[in-house]
Image (cartoon, rainbow, N blue to C red; front, top):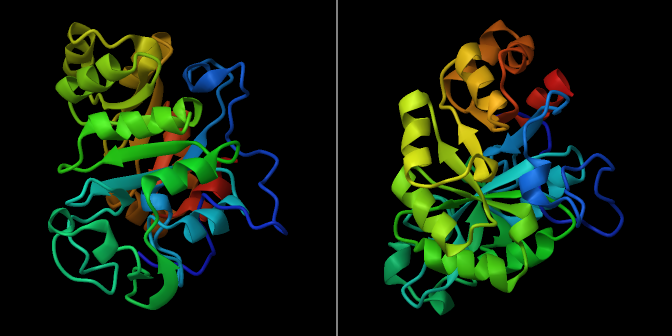
Length: 286
């Protein structure tokens, strides 16, 4: 899914200030209050893999995050893998092959074997950018962005939460989980963290309730299909914001029918749109 608009959300070059309307909670507010649903909640954009469909800008890359953050406010969804020697690094795949000049499984490599590799954009074009560590990303993001941290299968939640605490990033990071057991693990590690939970129907909501996850700690990922207005209203009554994954089929629908469809999703109760078309979505819903 390629487009020509420059986009991405995480590093600020000195001559390009962060947009005034960036999604940043105040120190007193915190992320839990910032992402609590209220009737005047304004819809947001979440950049899938940090916005990797921009020519010349690889996914999960600080330089790419910076490029986007200078242009539009958005939440950065990014991915965390772990090396053999336990370095937390930013990468969607469990291998180096697709996005770097390296080869092989990340879990079989030490960080020294990886740190100097160069990144490719989604078209395969080689760049001068290198793979950032999670610590570098979190330290950069303070007072600039909100992160949605997608913890990949090989990566322990314990280590990710420990790094969030080490960098004092609790108020600008939410942890992405895929079931109630993972949500409970994250909540037990730190009950003050915001958790992006997969809640696509009442039964999935009830599983999280039974696991002891308070409504205030939840942002609900409601799936990748057209939203159910009644279910979204149910979540809103609980004070829970919703995330719709438009990446994939719904983004393709917007390309075919027109970007006005994103506004329709918002009208049906979507609060955050996770997309590969960040610029287009922002223009449609701002």
